[in-house]
Image (cartoon, rainbow, N blue to C red; front, side, top):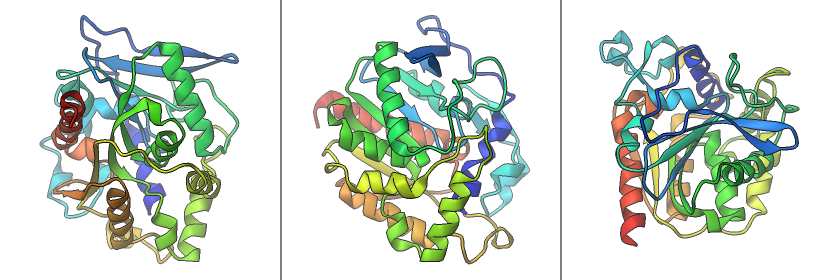
Length: 302
């Protein structure tokens, strides 16, 4: 079920991006070379810079939106984000963190569904290594100062895992929000893993599609994770039973994989109440607080 969950943020696509403040560069495309550009939205000032890596099919808009406080889906015990009303808000994760330090979010190719600010399309599907290479190019082209506190959601967690291993010099801190843990396929059954791989790469010619099996292999062959301040956040809500099949990973399996990732990072997996997979929409203040805590640890050298 993990793949179905990470695609629902496409519904945010027609909402406006949060306005930049007086000290912010306007959000827009950044030339990364080879005739390509990636959309980047940076808000706030100060350091260390926080850099957010969205989940598969998701993009920068989601980090400036929340589930409306009066939305009836709050009463559901399940993760039914596809039914929720999402609204732009100054209490969303990005503008909240921007009051403390600079925070940047970007769009990978094939994520923003329409408009004139889309990142340059590329051939799909692709693996996590291509996303790591694009991130390094974007950081350099935008002139962003590192090292960074990286924040990753869902598939973005696998990208961040590989980035941290391949480019530890860029990493000051790590925050994983409902990540795709590197340990997930070791816990899943062959049928579950096969379904996950198929769903991830079968998104259509224009949508972001990922070669998950290759991506997990890239992480497995990379150097060890760096030891830096880190946090892992897991949701307490899961999709309704009628949306699940035996080929979906279970909530217990996802939690176990996140626990293992947290242990590898020298931290604990924190379960956030009243949140679903897209935690930044359900509990933006909790996500922002986790980021700010890592920022403060980096600043103080702890």
